[in-house]
Each structure stands twice: as C-alpha cells, then as structure tokens.
Length: 500
Image (cartoon, rainbow, N blue to C red; front, side, top):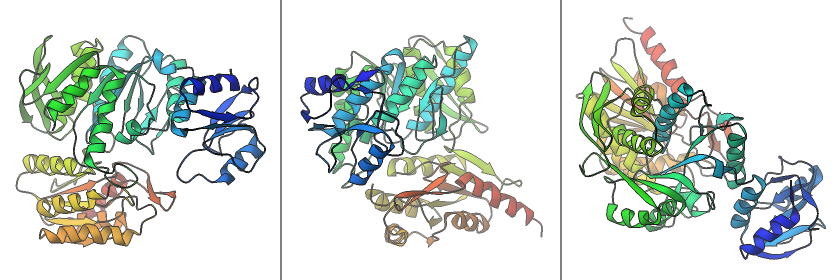
C-alpha cells in the first residue's frame, strides 16, 4: 500500500512538486489516468492534450479521492499540483507498481522498422528455452499484441503510457515471468513513457525519416535524438552497424556499460551474418560470433529479416541462451501480420500482409519482393494516418509509384482528418512520378479489386495495418476485419472463378 506522503516525497525529490491540499496520511489504493478505470481511493492523474475537466469530475464521482495535475480544477477534491505531469506520471507508476521492472530481464527494441518482428524472434527463442527448463512463457509488449502473464490482448499503441506499462511489468513479475521483451517507440523515449526504467538489453535497429509532424517530432534530428535516449537506460546496447549515422550511434552507445554489434556488411561485428541465400521459400544465412560459426534458417519471408534475426541472436547470446534454442526459435518464428503470405490455389497470386508503413520499410519490402518474385507484376494497397507522420504521404506515394505496377490508395487510420484529402495527397505524389493508381476509400473493397484485377502472375502487397482489427476514425476505433481476412476471402472468390 502507498500513501499520499510517498508521492509527495518522490515529487519533491524530483523538484516537480508545486503545492498540495491532500492529507499526507491518506492511503492510495489505486492510480489511474482513465476516468473509466476508477476504484475507491484512486489517485487520478489529469493528463493529455484532449483532457477535459469533465473527466476529472467523472473520476471523482466513481471513487477517485485525489488528483494530480499541472493546474487546479473547479472542485474541492484534494490535489497535488506539479510542474511536469509527464514526469509525475512515470514517477507515480514506478512507485505504485513497486519498481517491478527491476525483477525482470527487460529487453527494449527501438528502430524505424523491424521492431515487432525482432521482438517476436526474441520471444520465440526465449519461449523454447523457457519451456525446456520448466519456466513460464516470456512477456511481450509490441505494436501487435501484449502478454504479461495476466493479460493477452491486441495492442493499440507501440509503447503504452507509464501506468499501463508498469502494470504490465507488475503482472509479469507477480506471475513469475523472467523475461520481458518490448518495443520502445521514439515517442515513448521522447516523452518519458519508459523514463526511470533500465533495460537489461537495449536494441537499436535502424533510423529512417518517419514520425515528423507537429504532434510527433518537429524534424529528423529530434527523432534521431529521441531514439538515442535508449542508450542512457540500458546495461547492454545492441547496435546494427549497417544503419545510417553509425559513428554517431556508437558514440551515444558509450552511455551503456557494454556494447554488442551486429552486421551483414561489417565482418568485425560481434554477430556477423553473411552468405545470405534462398533455399526454396526459406532464407538461409551463416552467422559468425565468438561462440560459434554456423548456418541459421528463417522460414518467415523477406530477406531484410536477416538483420532482425541477427539482432535477436545478439540479444539472446548476451542473455546466455544456448545456440540450439536460438536456431530452433528462429526456425519457428513468426510475427502476426508481418510478411504473412497467402497464395491462390494455382500459385499465380501471392498476397503479402505486412505492417510496412514508412519509406524505409516500403523500400525494403519492394526490394525483397522483386528478388523473391522476379518477373511478377506487383501491386500495393495502402493508406496513411491522419494528422501525423505527414512525410509518409510523399515518401510512400513516390516509392510505390516508382515500384508498383498499380497502387490502390485507401484508408489507414484517418482519425480526425478527412479520408478523401489524405488519399488525394498520396495520389498526387504517385502521379508526380508517373505511377498508376486508383483511389478506393473502402479498404476491404480496395483489396478485393487488387485481387480481382491481378492479370497473370502477380504479387499484391497489403501494407500498413498488419492484422490490426480496427480503424481510427475521429477520436474512436471502428472495427475492421483485418487485411488477412480480406486477403483470404477474396483469394477464395478468385479461385471459384478459375476455369469459368
């Protein structure tokens, strides 16, 4: 149990306490920033760009006893006023959930592309090792889904806000889980969602232009600097030497006590991958480390996934996992909605569901598809989110316009921005590079048309949503059956028409 005094003390220590009217001896039975998630004696945190006073009043009616805010509201409820609500939130979360992260082997992964796939590569390896040793499945927090020993659910945010994140740490630790792998977004690092947490291993995959907007990062330098923060809060830094700005990255990595590198180009890397080749539908590559030199096999498609696999190998070796589990884990590894292939019965159409959603991932996806499906026509179905990552409209429009035979521009989380204007902006960039496109607002219909209009042997890329089950429309979430659902449905319809 915690008391108001505990929160006041930690806010004082961090020089953010301004004033308070709450009784220091009152117990705090719960901490929340969600007015729908309130218990008796809840300490309610007022935060967010869309916060309204009504949320606080609703929370007080349901049992909240005090609130934390940067300003006073029109209520007599006891309050704690702080100068930095973001800092106050992670401090409160860390206190309430008893610093549970300290009892976990915590792995954090940041990068412009490949975070989810790498997280699941690591999870497959760890889970094989844990199963053989009679231990519990590892925990994960990713943009695909979340498992913490108590909760298993689809994710709606790459890295949760501090209260939710620390609850996952707490659940995992209380469930007897040893390993916890998580994606760490640039937003999480910039705004302190993971502040105060030390990762056993912090991974840096790559950097490309993304998330540049008024509500995310004002420029690329801010994006880059945000990612570099992970090295100040990890014991071991795992770094991709093949990424841009490697010299700068290595300088920042000096903030970590230990550094491990991986590469497919630099043979001096601690984990060096080479002789990358296709064996049927599998990808085989040789890895050299201080401990061994041997071949590994990936059954998940995409030659670019070798880099993600090397990162997973580096992490698991650092954690002391035997190479046999690394090999078997990578052989079985899958990431839901990442390079998921569905083929028609006659093998003429391959539909690939993937989460690719920025310039770097689009370029890698097209390059891999051209190598793995030479001579085939390639079409792509994608959209861009509303009110954020605005550079994607230009980047993805131009990359797809140059590389795809046909581009189907459609919906992808328009939020509060008109879908029509997003699609038109993307289309203008496709047009600018001489690309062929069609605007179809309904995403399911766009997938149907892409499959129906596939002429001869072709590859259809469904990019940006993976297997997400919702569309962000306005301020809410609308149900969406998933790209995989539509891919399978319309491939079956195509098959029924064969020979007619």
